[in-house]
Image (cartoon, one colour):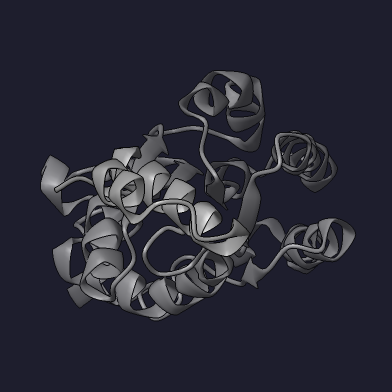
Length: 225
């Protein structure tokens, strides 16, 4: 017997019974809600994000997504890494990557600026544009830092390294200080060029980075709600 039939046979028994009957009928007729869509995380970066020298399923975004799922987060990590990209390149393609409508972003840029000795002030302005654009789009962001090599001199190194904490303070976003933390300069964790992480190196990055990413996601809930 349907809810409406039960209500019809029960007769009018006062306002409370009538309201309960209407509610029961509505709930019976309402479709079952579809599962919430996965959280969408934009990984905007350079070759470290893109997975230079690795198979597609070994790239950082893929391994990070697997770790997040294992930890109970229904999340998709969008690989928007481009090998050789500078902060200027990342800023230039921001509108394009935002077409994926991410809710969260990991910004990993600056390594190529530092390797080429590009002006830290320009890198700051480019990253500033990126963070401003993400804020305008209401995308919650984790800024991931890079450290300059020492070959450009101490002044350059200090100016470059200061970019990330300054921007994190300006936009009130969390900062993961150094993408290659625990990996840089370790031959066992890098490819032959000494610059790009190998498979074990990616595993170290994921293990260290995942807690910061999960902290970013926790406001949305583990199940995506």
